[in-house]
Structures are given as structure tokens and as C-alpha cells.
Length: 255
Image (cartoon, rainbow, N blue to C red; front, top):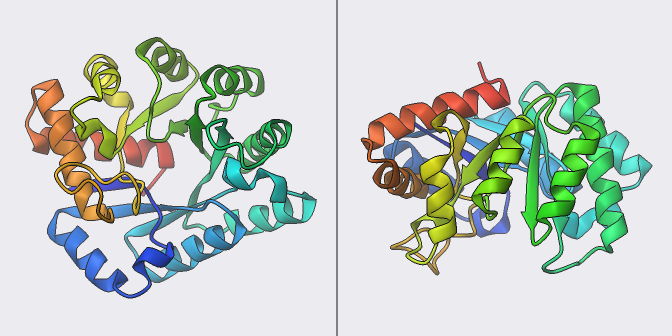
């Protein structure tokens, strides 16, 4: 059985056919999905989905794009959302210097505040990092962000950074780009880091793997990421499914 460790099932892309999407996931062997919040509304919807579905869990948080919206009131509302037993992490949070939709200092402030929220709740953090590798690592080290575990979602850095992050308590998650032919950097990381620190995800509806690249992504496609990882590590896909599912259960403290 497979786990999609990072999905956005609350996205409007699924408003007309979520039941069919879930059915295809089940047929593909995906028995658990972590639905990730990216602003307060999306976090609330993730929790609502998790409450209605036994095989969905939620993470609540504010994406760096929306860092400017994180005030004390929103932080308190996130805290209250996170008290639901189906909420297994805080995030996604982090830094995004590619789009810079929120000012950098506000991104950093929101990142640190959510790390502290996760520490108060004793939950792992789900981190988004785009073109901000060194600042991400510096904040993680300074704030001891991995004290309750953490996930570097859709990892895009190089091997030395992955090694440093693992030392800080983090797991490295791979998504559809692992299947791309030119993803040599990701292939090297996936080949060389310890298997007990690897997760797989879709980030659906985004980052669709080959051969469906360019179309809407969905949790069933996490199987394609597992197949590519199995090829890279020269293992059977069933073994990769078992290892990555065990890792996901461990870091999210799933029953």
C-alpha cells in the first residue's frame, strides 16, 4: 500500500470529481493521503475532508506566498484547527524566493512563528523551499525546527543540503519531478540518502509525473513516483511502497 504524503485535495480542481479521484487512488493502492493546507481557508477545508474520510489526514499552515496574511488572530485559529486529532502536522510553511509573493522578511517571520506553533503542539513541520535553500537551513538550525520531525516537501536541493537536513531531523520527499528525464540532481539525492528518510508525494493537482506531465495530478499518480524511486534504488516497487509508507507513518505519528 502507498501513502501520498502531500496532496491538495481541497483544491477547486477536484470540486466536481473528488469521489472518482479517491476511487482511482484506492485502485492504485494508495490507502492514505495527507491533505496539506496552504492558507487558513485551505487548512480548514483539509481538516473537514479529514474528518469525513478515514484515510485522509490534514496539515494546517500558511504557505510563504500568503505569509503576509499570518497575524496573531490567524495563528490562534490555526492552533485551534490543529487540536483536531486528524491534524498530523503544521504546514506547508517556508520560504519562496522564486515568486516572492510576500516580502522576504514577512516570509521569515511567518516561517518562524509556525515552527514555534508546531513545537508547542509537538507536531512535525511540512516545509516548502524554493530558491531559498541556505535561509531555510539557517532557520531550521537556529529554531531547532526538526525537534518533532519534519518533511522537506518536493525536495529540489542538492545532496549536501539533504544530508544536513536529515541531521536536523528531516525527511526528504520526492514528487513528480523525480520522473523527469533531466532531474539528475534529484536522482542523485534519491539514490544516495538513507531509505529510512525518504517519502513520496504528488503535490496534486500540481507537478504531474511522466507520462501524464501537463495534465492535472492526483493521488493515484504517486505510484509513478514510487516506480521511479524503485528504479533508481534497484528495488521492487512493493519494497519502496513498504519503506516509504513506514517512514510516512513514523514522521506523522499515524496510528
